[in-house]
Amino acid sequence: MTETKQRKKRIDAIDALRGLAVVLMFFHHFFYDLVEFLDAPEWLFTNPVFNVLHYVFAGVFIGLCGVSSRFSRSNVKRGIITLIAATVISVVTHFMGMPILFGVLHLLAFCMLFYGITGRLWEKLPMWIMPVFTVLGTVISAWCVNNIETESENLWILGWTYDGFVSHDYFPLFPWIFVFLFGTWLGYYIKEHRFPEKFYTLSIPVLPQIGRQALIIYIVHQPILYGITMVIKNLIK
Image 1 (cartoon, rainbow, N blue to C red):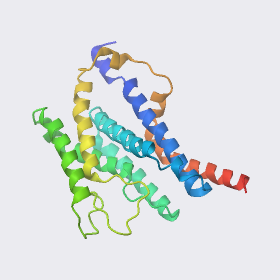
Image 2: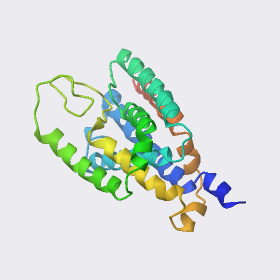
Image 3: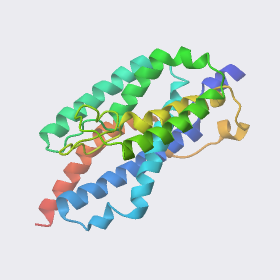
Image 4: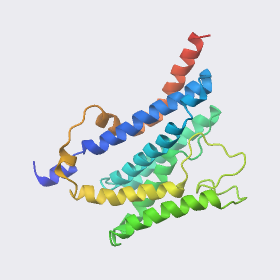
């Protein structure tokens, strides 16, 4: 197999890490359903460990999407497909009374489209600029969102919410777009085969297959979990 073909081959380590994030998301949402619909103890969903891990693995998932953008033939096409899926989720969850206005799929759709349109501009910059820009952007935007108040009701996509705002999955552009962009920088070095050879040849069971179906699993998992929860609820009546 030529070196070019090897680089085009999917990398199990990336897919496995994405798969792990998907599995943890699955259980996190299942615990939410148990608390919300079956009156399970709140600590099952809200506790110091899960509160931290939720954002850690969400960050890993978003960053890996940035990495994958370096391998994509068309990030604009990926972005449109993801946006359609995100819109369907918004419509369905609205009628379920659990609205998702700007969840992780909405964020990723925007990031893919943004990078697909502006990617060539980023590539013209020196490589050291991207990590500096993304780290500073993450810190500064997170500080601004948490410390600067506004009465506007039109900035929730950026991260400033208002009284009465509800989105059961919420990942605003700030600071998360910088996590995605950092992933695109990291993806450059992965694509150029700059990582240790073991990273590219590592074989991992099960998780890579889950990671490769992340979008489909994300779309279908919550209706399935909701159905399972309702079955359990009727059985224990």
